Length: 492
Ligand code: SF4
Image (tube, rainbow, N blue to C red; front, side, top):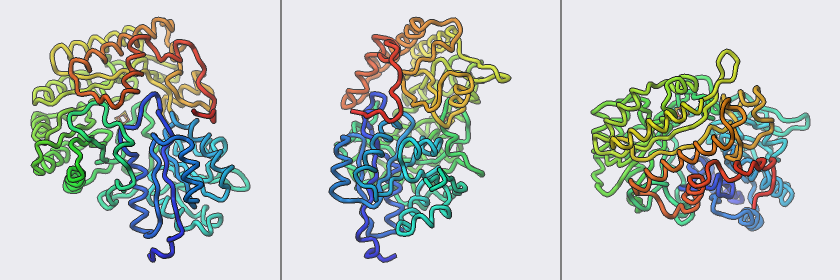
């Protein structure tokens, strides 16, 4: 395509201004940078601008006033929805002719809400690259084209309309590398626990074949396989590029790196073959499949940290939340990985909810105690080095969200937020007891982190927020029983 045809087109791609849940942004939003790289190949001449979380609300308006973009695309999770809605409404008032496109997990889960209440013109549902290019290509005759573009919801005279789902990209190797040139290193605080600096993230797989009750992963559900992996060669090529740009640690972003055991070993081999002893890696893995061979290759590839979603120390809870793993597998995986000299991080989720025969079931306080004992034992044995503790919050797109609505735990529309208080729905626990358990968990998290070290001081906001919960228990808002902000409330 002739680049001159797009010479007048500017596109702004934005994150919501942060921090979100008290956290600053560790690394660029690769979903947005992939949109830009994919569109650049097909629509040369279009100019892209990226606004990360660190940019203030006024920066969005200033950029839009300056470059007068044809399209403003924003990506956000449910936690950032209130901020996004407020931004979109003001942008529409300032520049009504600009197309406002929303994407990401929240827009995919509840597109009608994002259009009705948030003020977006179009929501991209699911994987965005092809859909976003189609919107840009048809920007001059958009009204007629919208019903023909798969994978969107849009505003029409008769209300919100949704088109059929768009098929996923089979060969994700064919997507060009993210447009890293749009992001500036100083805008990001880096990975929370790191060995090398500067550090960055890269995406190595898309989709997850599992369906845990609390997870919003199903918003991207489609017919056919959701999980796709890049080739080890393609991953190593991107790692080499980032190394040459000066990065010394990469978080290989994948819901779990070891869905396919042999592929994950091949990835490690390709990374080891780069021959950079000063380039470190970390990634999320499932506790199974795990083998001595995989643990050894993780070490050889210079992974210094592996993160497991352990969630709970109770097998009943793991079964309830459909985690599809056994406690023995968790212990086995921690021992193998730590035995190979790689540190282990465990994510725990307290007070989980699920349904049994239509009745609400939940994790009991004694089961949370069991999780704490389990984590502490593994820590003392030297096979678990870091932990992170949070309570389950209903997020749009998750099974938990639907059951929370059914059982009156939330009312729609709901903006997920750590001020949400689950304690009234857990039999036998008061808010004070709930808060005390959370405080103990956060203290364990802090003690483990202090002993293991390696946390990123530039992320001082996140560290301060965690320290507060270690001292005061559940989020300060919860402790004061402050109602979550209504949708669309202006963010500072
Ligand atoms: S929690 Fe992890 S394993 Fe479970 S559905 Fe979500 S991404 Fe997949």
